Length: 230
Image (tube, rainbow, N blue to C red; front, side, top):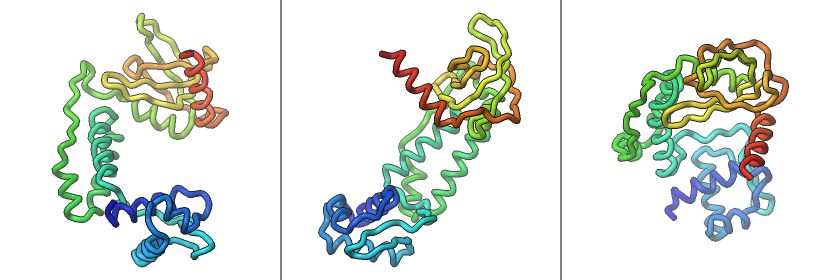
């Protein structure tokens, strides 16, 4: 492992830890001597990384410290690049633009050699030709409702073309190759339901937030799906 990769791994270990990590424990995780570990911590501190602690006490990242965007391994950069390119094909225009903006921000902070690697990456996402080439116009409204944990009034057409109007609590959206699927709690059915975005006829956002956290809905839905798959 190169020294730069080891420093990144040390940063990641400190960032993930909930409690101060002792020098010997960090050295063992990195596969280096304790002396090397102390030198690496000194190097990171010289570069401005806010690491609190001392030998015999333990080390921790100071609260509020954010890693700069250039702190990525080559594999992580390729993953970000591939994800941003995929999002630009599958998501609504606002999210696609946000993905490109985030990638540009990361790119601008990279050293020249890594910037060239990003610009000339061989990882491509071919254009996706769908029958419904344009993203559904209500994707943004659905995403915002999920983010803000708000109810929506959904006008929906099922596979038989029958129309219905429902008040639902959207908490997840899955992006498949040819369609997007919204997962929500349906007040009409008093159960979880999945709605294809291309069958949605209109979305009316409501001011009312749904009564339980999104994380709780995801957990209950996951348990139900696991039970049904048994």
